[in-house]
Amino acid sequence: MALVVTFAPGAKSAGDEIDIPSGFPAISEILGATLFKGHAVDEDGTASYTIGPTSVTATKVDANTIKLDADTTAEDLLVLRYIAVGEVLQP
Image (cartoon, rainbow, N blue to C red; front, side):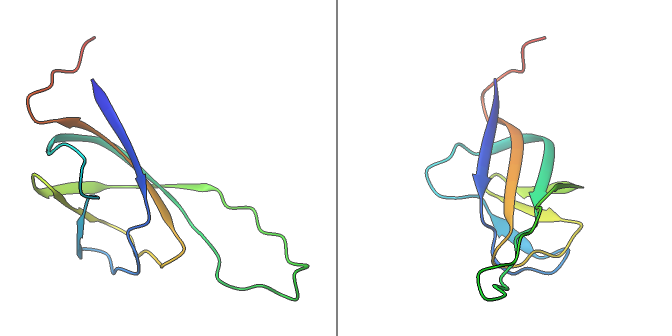
């Protein structure tokens, strides 16, 4: 069964190592990742931003660590889809 983990990876440069949040099963295989870009600017409370998904490539470093091919900021959210160690993806 595929797992979906949504978390804020923090401000990272492309290629930096990112740990998945504690408590989630170890990564066997990454299925995909989507980054939702956040904004830290508030223009007197009148600003309106559309935050759309950005496809990114996640690479497994080890059972609990990944790398992305894109920079992230403290306001971004990452949706990571993966198969956990010991699980099998059913057709």
